[in-house]
View 1 (cartoon, rainbow, N blue to C red):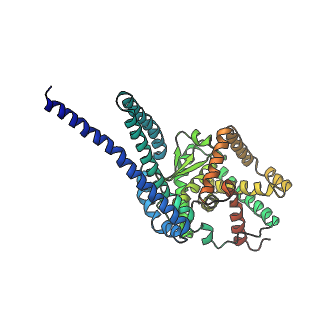
View 2 (view 1 turned 135 degrees about the vertical axis):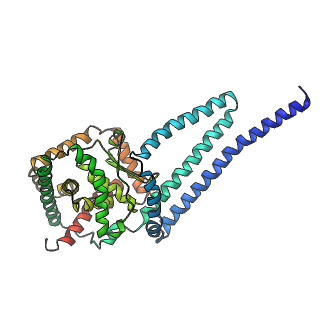
View 3 (view 1 turned 90 degrees about the horizontal axis):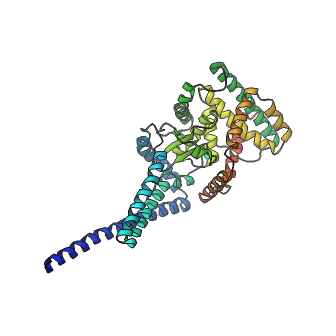
Length: 385
């Protein structure tokens, strides 16, 4: 081989090596910029009082319309499919570079894997921040309702639970007249996601802050993934989708779907999402949605009452229509089969997540829905004690 041939071979190798080295540097730079942008936005939201509200009102709705509208075109949960593709792709990508590293240059393979992971971290952190994280710092929905969220008496809680029981039974009777039973038929089950969307649009007519380009809520195909984590639904900040657990007892679906859709209006606090879901369902034109909303309200309210007046709480539950009690029994049995270490770990992780986003009470904040219902009941029926 001539000297020129050797030089050309070495030059081409170094040129190719330079291109391979440039890739990890570019990915690390892009990942770093995305992480810096996410951090800067988080700091703004947490430290500048007006920023969260301004963002939730002027910027986030555009993202919902663009990204939520695009991913809403797909009839399946894009984030669920993406999770499976991501898992397979990560294994393939990592396996390829490990194999190549064993054959050629292991340190280079580690740079490729590490830089790819760092870029992905930056992308996810940035998407989470702009589609979710900032919204934790916007004005609470309850502030628009002019509600007095303190000073509740036990008597008020008792009156609320009796009211919820009456409304729940009225809705249940209407469902049974229409369906023949409380068990929804296949046609009704298929209509529930679309009805949730319509219920949220209707509620937005009363509260313009809830106006949004609502996509259709989607069932998670492999809902066991949610069940083992004790999750009835999940909002995806990466695709701006509202997803729900299709395996759970059906009466949970309308309220859960509205709960998740409420996050697409920029209201991320869990107790408020529960309350918005309650308002949307109980104001629905569909009897099964009203049944779902009042069922959620009664369960939250009666659980709170049990801590103050166990006897009355037990009496109210025992006096429910047998069909409602059977629905509640099925629901308890469904979730009981998934109790275990995974469920406990998921609850702890959710608690940590909520506290990290300035919900100091963590998972206990879900219980604050009772305060919102009490305040709303007090305002709606001032003549009651």
